[in-house]
Structures are given as structure tokens and as C-alpha cells.
Amino acid sequence: MISRILFGDRSWREAKSSLDASTERQRVIASNIANAQTPGYQAREVAFEELLQDAGATSKLRLAHTSAGHLSGAKPDVAKSVVRTRSGGPDGSGANDVSIERESTEMAENSLHFQALSQFLANKYRSIRDAIRPGA
Image (tube, rainbow, N blue to C red):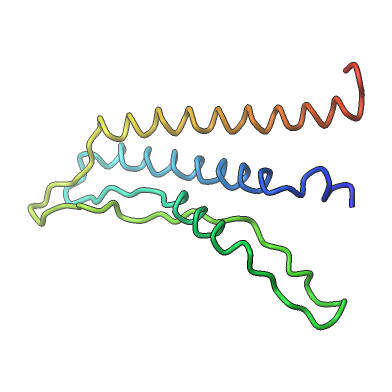
């Protein structure tokens, strides 16, 4: 019960899923940069925000259970990220579509996003700690 009160709100799950997606995005960006000179390589991207919006749109749905022993119907983690080929890929000329400038910009944006989410979670944990140990 106490864990549901402390960690049950949607912001915890969404922040955790966002951190996971940010980690995956960093890995995909690094892979794109590593393959910048690979002929025919198609840049990839992480689709997470769209999945998060879709999950939010369907969050009003509840599972029905007919027995107390059945699953509670609680929502699983918000979303898993999906790695997909970026639209506008190679034109068949054997060249790839990786732009180092674009990847560097996305890496910097992703880093800022990750830092902001980390700070958000740190502040939430700090507030719980302060509630448990006033004056800490």
C-alpha cells in the first residue's frame, strides 16, 4: 500500500520509461554515427514519444477480472521504445543517409532530456527522503 502511495502515480512510470527510451536513443545515435561511412546504411531512430502518447490515450481502459486471484488489471510499464528506420532513407544510390550534424544535435538534445529527467526523479526521491527524515 505504501509503495503505491509513494510510487504509484503516473509520473514515476513515465519518467522511468522515458529514461529507458533515452538510453536506447543514445545507443541508436551512436550506432548511426559509427555507420556514417557504411555504404547503403539506413539511419535508425527511436520511436517513444508517439508510443507514450498512444499509451496515454488508451489509459482509460481497464482490465476486468472475475476472481480475486486474477491479475489486478494494473497497467504495465507505459511503453517500450521501438527502433525503426528513419523515414527518407537512401535513394538506392549506395549512399547512406547519416548526417553527422543531425546525429550530433540529436545526441545533445537527448543528453539534456536525460539530465532533466534524472533531476526530476532525484527531486522526487529527495522529497520522499525529507518526508521520512525531516531535517535531513
